[in-house]
Image 1 (cartoon, rainbow, N blue to C red):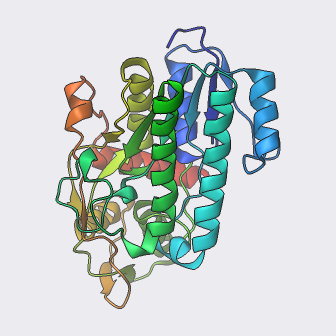
Image 2 (image 1 turned 180 degrees about the horizontal axis):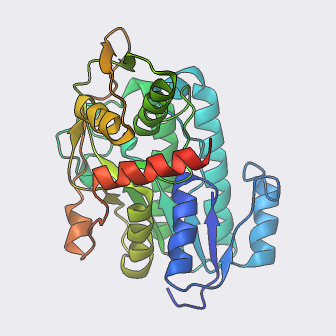
Length: 308
């Protein structure tokens, strides 16, 4: 990707997209294109096509998506499936029709079967049933991967896909009803500390294992892939390490300085029992994450406090 590339980051206000914009600026790419939802409605095929025809980006990062945690996925299945299919179809199709040089589609680790062998290898896709609590989002993301692969086979497009593990960092969603586990824990423990609560209730048993990657590390990986990767097979992007939700809650509690106890509400669902990605293919190309979990949580907490 040349320095004079005209790069469009779809979803530039989100967790991954905003990190991408920061990283591209840091690496000295001067020609970035971004649009808010009000400026270009990605659910409107004609509007997306018109935007691509007018701007003619050479490189595209598809980081736009409707995202949320277990509760949001469970209560809005139609929204998660339709909106994600619509926006990614519109972006990928317009990129092909306007001759975009290279496109990177950002998926999610939830594409893998619920009980797939661990760590999750790329070839495990579509080998078993999905996790029911987020299958609608997962089906949409799988369709996006396949659409990129199909354009590659039929039209020779240099469209690639990357699957990140659980992300956190600046511009995360801290809404307790719609957020993922780490930002939800940050908010819970902060508010409990401010109120002087003696305990905090967390969902499930605390036993599930999860992997986390700071959004700035993801951005570095995605720019690296845009520069160095060109294959039909999607590629995992993870940290290579995992932690139980129980230990994660303790770590967040320590970073925030909450001195009370943690109570586990076992009437609430745990979700997937374990989700560690095998990022060996990416690591073998020479990329490694730079931000440790404790440091990353401290950075995320500082970001959360700026939003209060």
